[in-house]
Image (tube, rainbow, N blue to C red; front, side, top):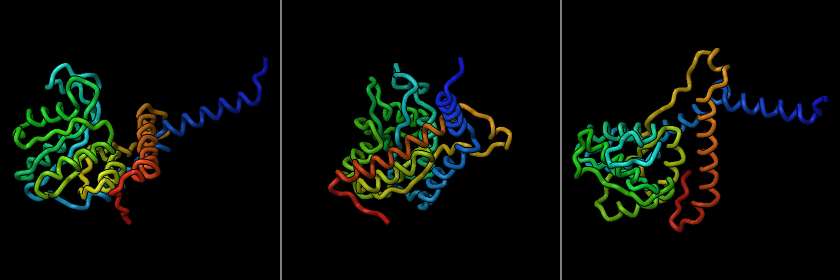
Length: 233
């Protein structure tokens, strides 16, 4: 029985969409642009002594069964923690503020904080914000926490692809932060490899859609609900 023309066109369309979303040749330029955006936001240079380093959680692979179950952290959370610890070691009297809740016994912030302590950061230099479930909530809740403290430079640590949305969320929530992107994903591959559909390409496409849709949603909905929104040129 012959396949209807409409079904053939539909199948061809699905195949083209799959190739566009999975081939590094088409995905990497857009992803590279997102990471370059993060580089442009990182203009402050090395933090001064006494800075507050805000570290965004990156999710769990599974629910941790103990506070030191570091294998529960997703790769983003591990990379952000390692980058923040390295930054704190170079910044005297700095404080690491981990932010991120979760519906588990131990919050993302708590596990990341425990990892930082295991890597040599003193417990009195680690603070936790454990109620947030989104980047937007992290911006609001850390703002409230830090309002009680003396003024200090604030540095925001998150994955490079996540920085543009996070940076805007924090700035528009009234926080003057300096961007410190971590965990840049590779967007360079030999030409032949760039023509082959890959799971990594689909993962990057998923991240791209999440970040750009998130920025659109924040612009149209979230930020308009804040009485203290500031417009930045």
